[in-house]
Structures are given as C-alpha cells and as structure tokens.
Length: 273
Image (cartoon, rainbow, N blue to C red; front, side, top):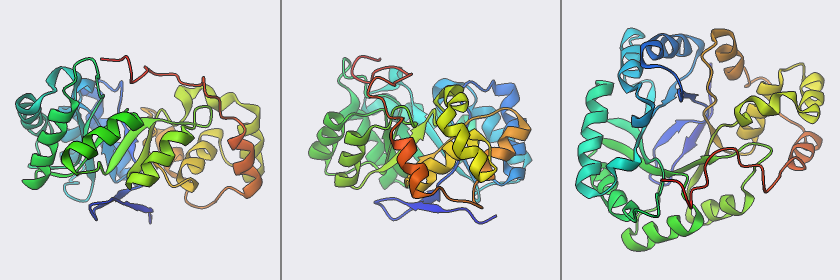
C-alpha cells in the first residue's frame, strides 16, 4: 500500500495518515498497534498522558516494525519546563523501548504556567541531539506559535489541533501556512458525531464509502495529517482504506459549509492546563 507522505519544514517526512491511541489501555495497545501495522499503518501517535507508551512499544516490537513505523509522543503539562521536559522525554523513550522518536510534541501550551517557551527550547535541544527527529506542538494558538518562533527562531514542524468538518480552524490554518507548519488533526471524526451527519452520509453513498472514510479523505485532500483512532479491527482497516478515491469539488464545498466556529468538542487551549 502506497501512502502519501507529508514533508516537514525540517525536510523530514511522515505518513499523512496515522493511528491515534488516545483512550486505549496500555494492556490493549500492543494488540491494536500490531493489528494496525498489519493493516498498513506506518505512523502511531501516542502521548505520555495516555499511559500506553509501553504497550505501543510492545506492539511495534511484536510486529517487528522498528524504524519503518514512525512514532509520535507528547510532553504532558505537569512536565513542562526545560529540565523537566528533558527528563520526561527520557522516560517516554524508556517506555517505548526506543532510542529516538520521529516526532515529539508539547501536548498543550498551558499559558497559565507560562513554561511553554522553556519547554520548546528543550525540544530544540532534543532535535539537535537527534533523539527527536522532528519536533512540534499541539493545541497551540497563533499567539503561542508566534511567541516560540520569535524567541527561538525555530518553527514547529507540526501543530496538532482539534480539527474536523464541524470545527475547521481556517484562521489558525492560515497562520500555519504562513509559518510553514503542518496541520495535524486530532478527533478528526468529531469523536464519532460526524458519522450521523446527513451531508457526510450523502457523500459517502455517492462514493460507496463509509462516512468515516469520507471524513478521513477530506482531511487528506485538504493536506492535513490525520490520526483517527479505533480499537475495532474492522474499523481500523476501513479507516486506512481511503487511497482509492478522492472527493470532488462539490463534496469539498458541501463539507466546507459544515464549519461551525462553536463546534469545538475538546478543551480550549487558552484556559486548559
């Protein structure tokens, strides 16, 4: 299976479609990761706070998929700050059983702590040392992005944000384009709420695809990285079976009309953490 790759501002590439493992128990993660790799996934996205890095690492080992599968993990809020971020990264590597990760992200800016710049400086050091091949952020607003770039001169490769057809974040995506940052999307299916949408359903029927496949295809056609999560083997396989069709202009226009500025499902980055 040939999958499209996304090229970062540092020249590295990662598969555009990956597997998210939020809310997957550590003891279940190994089997899910092994199943996903057999289905063709070549990118797994975890985080320290998910408490399943060890299971992800075990799944990669069981599948005998070392460097051929990219791994993303994230720095949790309580570990922000320069020295604490470095120590937290070491612990993540130990749990994953790896010498490096392909992408390391600051999970939330936590502006009330005001430590995200120091945390970003730690990530820059990790990249310079080669243990984090690429570095980025998650849930950062335009203000947070401009500040870390202004204070370090290093732009994140990625900003992973809540983004789905009912919350399309067009203004933030414009800032990403300006700064050369890839948009990566969590909760791309709107935590399942989009799968009952009649507009998505009509498009799916026309293409003989599932609603989830249409939404994932929308992310791909829009140029985003996307990490749908499923613990169901059949849905895992369906979610990656999206490379044999593309949405038409009328489909994209219909989905664009679903955008709702109040469509956020997750926490607000300005107040969370």
